Length: 263
Ligand code: 9WO
Image (cartoon, rainbow, N blue to C red; front, side, top):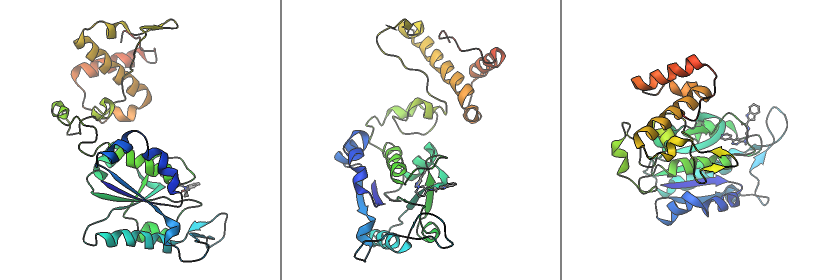
């Protein structure tokens, strides 16, 4: 997977490329991240990328020419290949695990990071092939969103997480290493580590029991309970067993009683 990031702040990305998953994926050759300074595609002495908005109003807008030049230069590297060009913007379609999965099938992605008041709409209409939002909030620019997309997509590239066989037991065709909450369409269950008692707060007994059947049931129930309380919209899409439905019915009857750690 190759990412071509077009930005006026290429240095912004250095630290995320030097840590964690993206660093490893680059070191192992699973990912290549190329940073392109939009100002390198200007032709005036001041390397101008922006201009005042037609119709008036505050701030500045990215002018189309440098963005078209940058993307066309990338396209010229492999003129025959389809090249997805993603504009990061709150106006885009929402990034979900399913969208990340879809993007992970591409060999190469161009990510355009906007700043100021945004890009000239002709970039969105005639240069970008896709527009993606990472959530319903405004940022100061697309760079953080581009980093989020790169991490979410790179983890899905086969080989990046290493354990490729363990997915065969899953009912959904998802890559190995996909966290349980995503695999099951539920929020994650709580996790605990040592000490077994911290400032008087005890780890749920069942997790210390060594009874893996009971632990599995406890985790499932806690995930269902948390999802039911916080993200009931997710529950509608999850295949539920008879046991799951009985547990949810119990929660509904208890209404907003906190779920005990005994589960
Ligand atoms: C500002 C705004 C204010 C009121 C109503 C709607 C609004 N949309 C925007 C907006 O799109 N501002 C952008 C902020 C302008 C370009 C730089 N900004 C930005 C945000 N770039 N990328 C994002 C972003 C946010 C979430 N997901 C992906 C990208």
